[in-house]
Image (cartoon, rainbow, N blue to C red; front, side, top):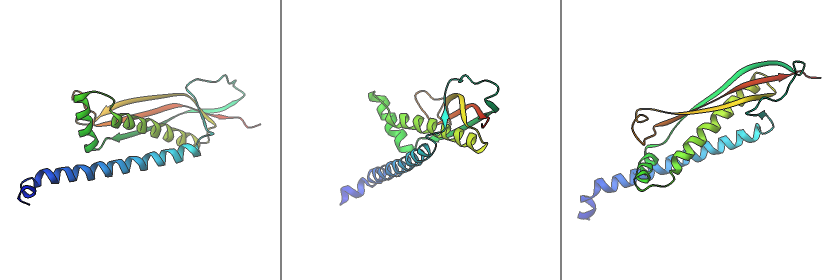
Length: 158
């Protein structure tokens, strides 16, 4: 019992680490579930990185649409990623961070285009950047911003 009391700080740290990691993983799973559900709803909405061959009679209106998302990695996954940097290998926490940010930004772009009555988005582009206090430090990522932008087109209805 004395040994446990002597290591109370270490035990508390490990418990908080486990709880924080679990809560962060739960939040990430919920976000992925939300993304998947929204992607399923927007599955038939066309978005492409090229400009299709449309003549002036087919396109009624075109306008710029954009969606952006800033996603942060939780402290506990950041700690594990720092350890992974020491030993090398894939950093899955950062991979999922960038994936979630890009998918969320693309979904927001599509939702904006649909809200304005567009039939498709062409010339879709994605940009990502790191932001936050630790973004300028070597080998550290605080948050990731992803921005998706493109040209929404409304077609003439026959």
